[in-house]
Structure formats: C-alpha cells, structure tokens
Image (cartoon, rainbow, N blue to C red):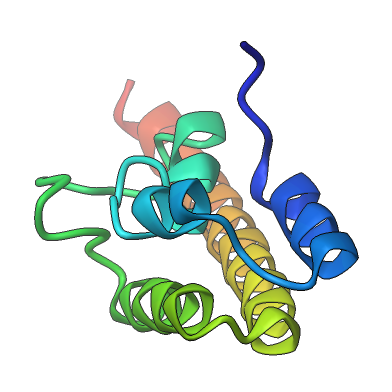
Length: 112
C-alpha cells in the first residue's frame, strides 16, 4: 500500500468533503504529520531531538500543531493554508542552513 503525501491527502479530502480517521491519526503523530513528512525528506533541516516533542524550531512546531488542529476540526481550507506555511518555513530554514554552511566554509579553509 502506497503512502500518500499530505498534499495528496488534502486533495482527496477536498474531493470527498472531509478528512478520514486515518488522516486524523497521521496528523496527530509528529513522525507522520506534515512536519514529519518534510523531516523525512530533509532530516538535516527539520531537527527533532524527540519525535514525541516535535521539531525544535518553534515556528514549525506551532504550524504543525495548528495543522493537526485543522485536520481534527475538518477545516480543509485551513489545513491547505497551513501546509503551504509549513513548506514555506522549511524552505526558509533550508536557505538559512545553506547560508550558514557557506559562511562557515571560509573559516574551515583558513583553519585547515
């Protein structure tokens, strides 16, 4: 059985008019929610020291919490909006991570 991504789940929910129990269960788990999906693709960007506590980034934590609340409430439009915000935040974190790595590169070259 193929695991759907959250974008696909939102499209299916919109077509059906509601989220499934599986959607709600997955959204409640930091490892399977929209943040967890991003973490699986970018584990060096989305840092979670504990999957029980969620991501270290406070903004991402709050977006993930609100995403789950939207799924649980059946608010498809809000879940779509929050998924966009989660993806935007990940992109911002990825850019910052790349910038920080570039900034450290000259220091390492001088030290070597």
